[in-house]
Every structure is written in C-alpha cells, then in structure tokens.
Image 1 (tube, one colour):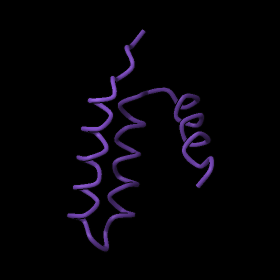
Image 2 (cartoon, one colour):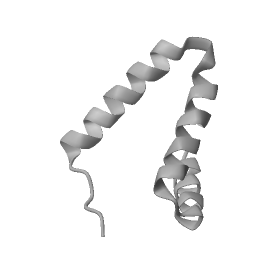
Image 3 (tube, one colour):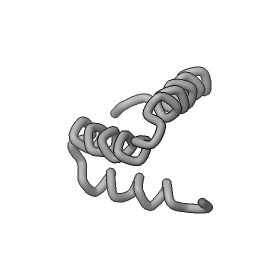
Length: 60
C-alpha cells in the first residue's frame, strides 16, 4: 500500500503544476489532458482513476 504525500509534498506538486500551466499558455488544456493520461497509465487502475475524476469535479 502506498503512503500518502505530506503537506510539503502536496504544496510542491501544486507549485510545480501551477508553473507548468503558466508555461503552456494557450496549450494548458492539452497539457492537463496529457498529464492526466500519463498519470492514468502510471496508476494502472482504471477504477481508481475514475474515482479520482469524480473527486476532482466535485465543488468546481
């Protein structure tokens, strides 16, 4: 079982993601789709990925 990231790690991920989105400019949606596909492949669990999508769309 994998260990959850701590707050410092999550802040680092947030900062890095924000920087990457800023750098991609008008291609930010394409970047996010590409990142999601790479993450799904790395996760290798379609049910878990579906659950993450459901969680991400909550309260937008």
